[in-house]
Amino acid sequence: MQLIHTIAELREALSQYRHPAVVPTMGNLHAGHLALVRQAKPLGDVTISTIFVNRLQFAPHEDFDTYPRTLEADCEHLEAAGCDIVFAPKESELYPQAQTFKVHPPTELADILEGHFRPGFFIGVCTVVMKLLAVTQARTALFGKKDYQQLMVIRNMVKQFALPIDVIGGETQRNEAGLALSSRNGYLTPAQREEALLLSRTLRYIVDTVRQGETDLARLEQEGMQTLRAAGWLPDYVAVRRQSDLQTPLAGDAKVVLAAARLGTTRLIDNMEI
Ligand code: PAF
Image (tube, rainbow, N blue to C red; front, side, top):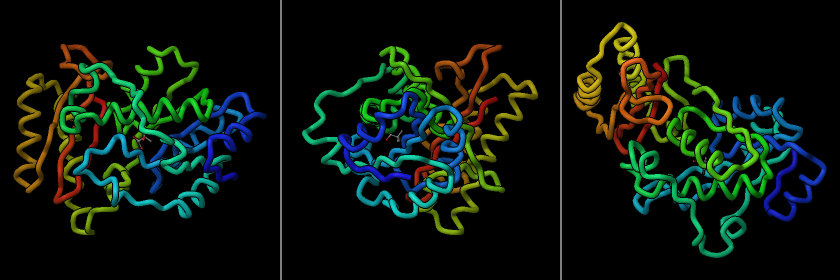
């Protein structure tokens, strides 16, 4: 496996390949990322993982400075998962000057749910993903479904810009108790890791209840918020949406329930398709 830090070196290394399959990450990798790398392997002639903590997608009060940087351990895991190239640029390499050209996703997709509570987040994500897709010459790119809205925003960006890239979603990986794997789980104390199960249990309850025929989705959303609040969480949203565009679903639409909530100082997100 090659570890590459500059765009020039990456271009050189990629000159012999026609179909890079790329897994963009911010590092601090867990089994969910590694599953994406394994999923990517047969989809291209070279498997690349990018590791870059993207300042553009963090608000000033968020955890950009403390986000764990674990390059050495990440590379060991990536090599074991069959990754061929790790592209880990410095900030000055990817943003040699202020990134004043940015990708602005449409408000109806990007200013709801996560985008409502993290204004500008998807501008930062789209801008860096566009750049990473360009420098890695990706023909296939994989993103985890745990960031459901992110996957949808990126899929639509790639489609509208007619990029010759297949965007593939990877299933959310969970621990044996059901907690969705996330780099931010590392912020939780052992006691909080137990408490964190309430998020997936709340979503599971909503999935099961809707599947049993409940149609009052607003009531279920409120109940979900209330369950989290009663246990001391600060929920941002619990929302049942249409899978295709994350708008309010009509009867018969394929649905997904999404939630974001703060447990102590850690903000966790999760979702389940219904
Ligand atoms: O999901 C992430 O880790 C990041 O948002 C991404 C897609 C790598 C862009 O920085």
